Structure formats: C-alpha cells, structure tokens
Image 1 (cartoon, one colour):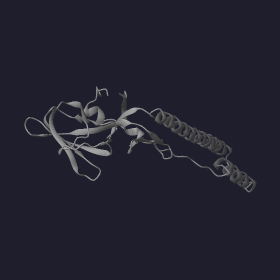
Image 2 (tube, rainbow, N blue to C red):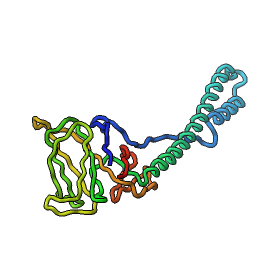
Image 3 (tube, rainbow, N blue to C red):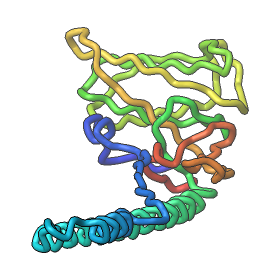
Image 4 (cartoon, rainbow, N blue to C red):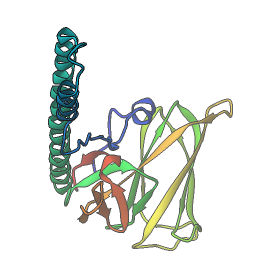
Length: 231
C-alpha cells in the first residue's frame, strides 16, 4: 500500500467535514401582505370622510412600498425553492461520490481499523518530531494485544500491524484500535491525530450523510481524507 504523503497535523486539524449546512424557508399565506393592504385601503377609501379625503401622495408612496414588499416575498419564495433544489442536488452528488469509494482503499479520520489479509494499517500524524512514540493496539474488548515504541517524524507516519500479539499469537480477523503517545527529546507530549485505512465493502445512503463500511468499521464519508492503491 502506498504511503500517505503531504499530510501534516495542521492541515488535518484545520480540515472540515462536511458537515452539513442548514437552510431556512419563508412561508406566506394564501392572501399576500400586498393583497391584504389593498383590501384595507379600498375599504378605507370607501368609508373616508368626503370633507377630509385621504392624501393621494401618501397612498401612492404606501402602494410603492408594498409593491416592493410583494416582490421581495416572491423573490424569497423563489430563493427558498432554489435552495431546496440545490440541497437535493447536493445529496445526489454526495451519494454518487460515496458510491465511487466502493472497492477503494480509503484513508479516513478514526483510530479503529479492520485486520484484513494479514494486516491492519493506520497513519498517525504528529504535530512535531518525536523521539519516542508508544503505539498500542487493543482489541474490541479493550485488551492490549500489541505494543511497541518507535521514533516519529512531524507529519504523517505509517504503521502496519501484521496481527502478531505480544505473546506470539497470530490474529487473522476482527477490528482493532490504535492509540499513540508521543514525546519530544525533552519529554514533552506531542499532539497527534490517527487515521485508519481499509477497503470499502458496502455503503449506507439512508441517512443525512453517507456511511462507508470498511470490513466492520463505519466511516462517515466526510471523514475520508484520501485513497490509496489496493495492493
């Protein structure tokens, strides 16, 4: 499998998922504000005092104001409909993008990875160079099955576990979790982020966001950071 290059801690932590954005819509009654005003105005004119008629200039200004309001309401309705259409279209595009991951080896934010074909693979991204990195693998019950110490460089570091436990046994399947503890030459802790990797075997497109199934591990499509070549 290829090495995940060009990834730094800052670029990873500053990325945003996709998250979802919210939209609001404006609803109007069957009778618009403009029509309501016209009804009230006609009633007023019909019942005005002939000796003290309404000022026509004021009426003209009010009509112009309410015409603008009517146009604004119509524009808001059109924009709301357009926003809903774009949201629906974005969902189709996102689902299509998720489907493209089927059979692909993805790299995604997450510390749990499947053990498949004799190996489980992760990347850990360090904020700085580390003199000592303690890498620990635990099983689904939280039991430590493997632990090692190595050095680590700032940015992306690849870690592949072949399923061999500390007591010499060989595991062949299951999902496992990686934890990383890194310190510099002065013993100061270094921040890190863990990425998992595996082949997407199925999809779930029923929710608000597509979910990728990576041999027992659920991965939100927004957590995908990239892909690798399946070896």
